[in-house]
Length: 380
Image (cartoon, rainbow, N blue to C red; front, side, top):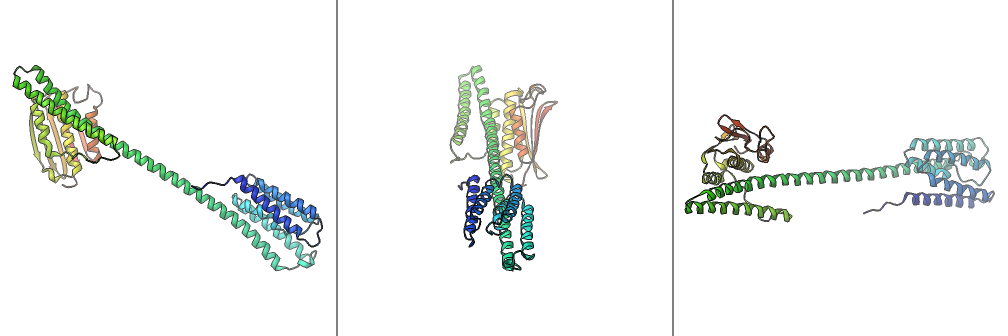
């Protein structure tokens, strides 16, 4: 990564360079008049550049006045623009371009006036000198502006990079949060369903008198807990690894009999009215529909004290409609104690439907409790 140079070091180098250049010009004067004073001014003009970042306008003014004082003292000629090159550059670099142009115009105007009034006969109408000083002033100002623009471009690039990294981090966090919610819903639906079935059969086993009935109930408990353990191991494996090497198959309405049979085995009468072929659904709609039915039946087993539940799944106007109705208690069930907010199961079902642009309602009915969902199906 590129390291930034200390600005104070840059200013010091510029000050020393300016002083050395002016000292060389003073030393090159054939008359060698006032050399000591010229060197003193060279050092002074160089020292001024150390504070160029904090006070660029004051630097310009002091530099111009110092040049006028220099020539008033009849010191060796060093040009009008050359001593101000550092000040012009600094002003343009620090967003004081108009001040730099104004100062250069003043210096060029004064120099031209004294050349044309006859006081300097050797320089009268010397166009080459004038063009040189104009070019020197323009180059100093242009270089300062170019350095400033390059610096601002780097700063903008760094800001854009920082914003991009921040957006990428937020996007990654959003994806991670979405994955956590998905896994939480899957764990709640799958393990909640299997453990609910296991709990019901455990109750049957504890109350059964017949040995065969007890053994059958225990077998059901064993099968249900085995399913829950497999799902739990798969989820833990996903959490430990960067990616899932063997993704679990996505369950859909083709597996609806598994849910219905488990509920029937728990003593619930289940009526299934499936009027859509599972292969006519998109994968996401099929999986969401299965999870909604599974969680709805789980809630019936857990909370409703129902004797029967009807599952109606149809294709209506390009959308999958799901209706799960039971004849259990009409209040304080399905994770909604009293008039409180829905439980995690209903929230999870709503999230599944809304993620696909659908809706879900869960509310008591005169005969029990009804869950109604509508999910758009792109394949329909």
